[in-house]
Length: 506
Image (cartoon, rainbow, N blue to C red; front, side, top):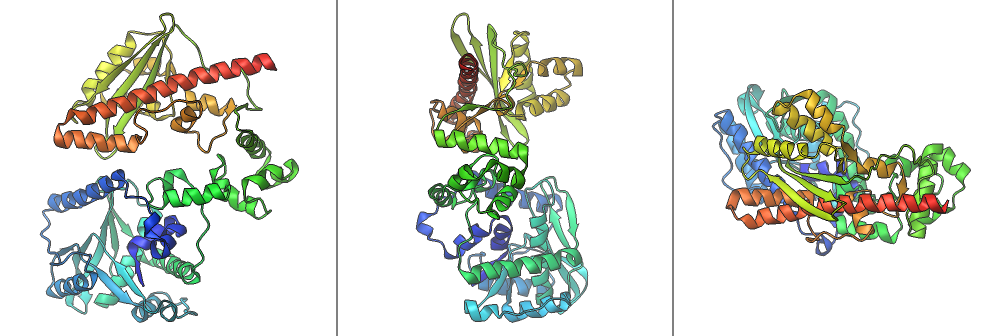
């Protein structure tokens, strides 16, 4: 069996994914998401940019990493030759070598299980972005290597540091010298030295835990976390499992920590959550959370929206005006550009709606579309501006700072903004698994014209436009953004009417 740094990284994020990658039925895997493929391309481009910026002369094995055995041999040969920088190499270690280097670097390490006897064979495999030659000593001569991992992340996440320690340990055994450091280079070219002394013991424990899970061959429990799970190729499979089990991770408000707390008291699915006493639920999660969960479960079981018990109609800020604006943004994180500012204008007196799109056809046009957007919304100084989530507010603040909009003017504009998501969370409980715009709008009967469209896919469409110049990609983006604005409008009206009706009833 191969235990790679890729599998270990995924294990740290989700043990179930690593288990399925080893033992799962690949016939039920989802196709790789286009957005994920885009991220992989960008990571490779980022590595090349780092090399170019450093004017780094590098060498690489002649064979790809798909043939890891030969790639490993060629990588070691390049290290023995003293190559200054090695790109695309592989590092490998067998079980006995892993035990030896673990004991030498951690006096408290104990091996009570011979994992190789369980798995038949066990190889630890690492693929650092670069190996950099440094002054020092190793079996190769008066030099040694340090591993460098180049990532698109903006901060040195713990899982990145864990993999840096994994790479460092394998490299230490190969060159018979512990690297002086293991390095991370992130999105902006920022460099971080990872303390191997600190992270190696944590990494060794993670490896042992991972091997234990794989040896037991008991599939780890599902837990759906949409932000983490959406790009995973096992998402559909795990989601179907969670639905069949009425798993609590599908109930909004159930975090991994709350789920573990509930499980300890035998509350592990929707039915048990619905029947547990209010007193016991309050003891487990606290009174405020207990009330929220009780209402959420009631809405799901009844299949109906209900008014939140804490709802105060005097605090609700959902004005209805003669002219209303609905605002949605499309952004490209890699290029750090907000490329579409979409506004739906609703004229209630005339019963008319019209969509206006301010689109950056080049990456240099962001300032231009910001000014166009500003001029447009200034035509309607009394119109409330509805949006869904905090992103629009944060973006307006960023663009105003970047393009020199006076603070008094941007503050006046932001005073007109109404976050529909925040207002809904204060007033209505929906029978849904997620309070995303798409989830709520779908529930009230609104459908996007392109059913597979999403923010991630919009980014891929924008990349395709920049690469090809085919305006069909722009049309897809505009249609998706317009539907987002329409969905916000329809949802706002639905909530206003629903709350008005409930007030009359009660």
